[in-house]
Length: 425
Image (cartoon, rainbow, N blue to C red; front, top):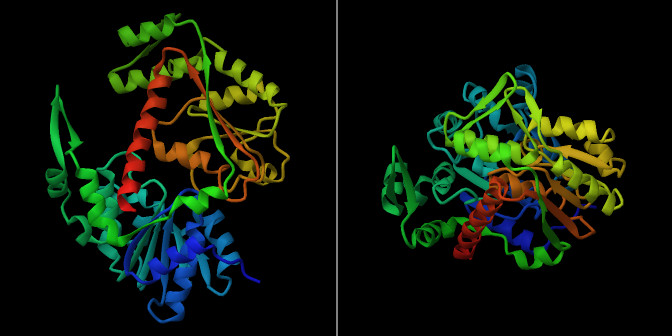
């Protein structure tokens, strides 16, 4: 017996079925794949589409689409075109072909006959001048195009243009320059130009794309999720090294030195120091404050199964040194079986496509990503449908450091995303 869609998911599937060009904006874990598979099956059944192509991040290709298809649409012939060129080529004959974004250039060289395409994690195509966008735009002329995302405006209104263009150029036009001129104004600062949205631009853009966009209403969905508790944990350290790097862009230890050539590099170096170390280029540790705080937190929570997100490889190496039982992304199955006490993940490797809600409900951030999309998607690995416990999201922040600026920036971007969703309802 097949699993049944919830009413709001049925509504979203109908929205897709009735439109050749459409986007679905839905929270992490709300069932975007199930919704889309259902709509795809119905278009094939009714003769509207003969063959579908699905583009997604690699892990989503291998761990989400084939797994969800068995539950929702076992009658569809779904082939995953991931692996060697020979393996990918063999999979291209499927009724539904799922391939990762990194293989777009290879895909552009093949003879294709798809009349429907789904872009999962549509933000991967936010840059209309990127190589993958151009390769895809040259070869895909599918009459039916659907896009799926949970973080449409996560890094600003500018990202919306590329995502809409790949779905339907009628939404926001063909040229990004014209889009920027209409909805943004220039701010010249020193040697570079920054663009800021004009007053009311967000609402105007969302109104234009509203007919082609389904926003999954969070009411019923959120009622089925346990609460998410985000807890900032303040840490302190000796600030001498940090202040020297911040002031001079240079830090010297014995025969090694760390030199930041610009503000972007110094920000990264400051984030390393806020975690207790710095690459010079070999890593030098100066403080263990965050790892001490992590140890205290694990003990306080009685060593409940916990996911730790890190930003730098040296943090991962230190996690393995301090906690010999710590496991990496290769231990996902053991995690979901409840056999992993400490799972160490990088947001870029675990931010999409992993269902981790069955293995635990505690998260700790050693250091934060600048990307709201990675931050929210990473939390969504636990805080999703099927989670039975309150999810605790602990963020380790070193006092008076860039940690707080990143945390604030994430919240500022989230406000933009929330406003955009409100405008689409």
